Length: 70
Image (cartoon, rainbow, N blue to C red; front, side):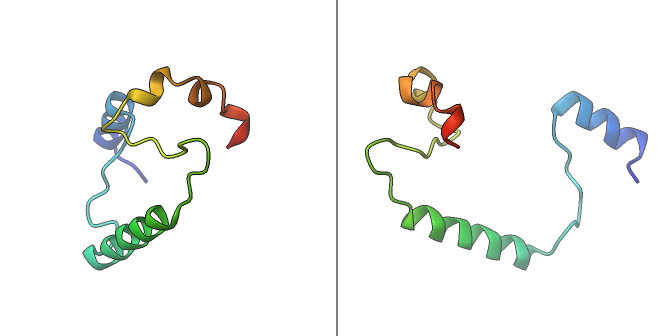
């Protein structure tokens, strides 16, 4: 169960940090696999990966009209 502080934090920030939810090893494994999947990803005619550090896609016509292609 979440306590009031956690609920308030989630409502304020739209995410919740759960300390010690899983091991560092598990996180490293997940990050490693994610990197592998991204490295193997074929983009084709349109760029389908939109990094959070680059907001160019926010004005891209394909991105803006692609909600039915997910």
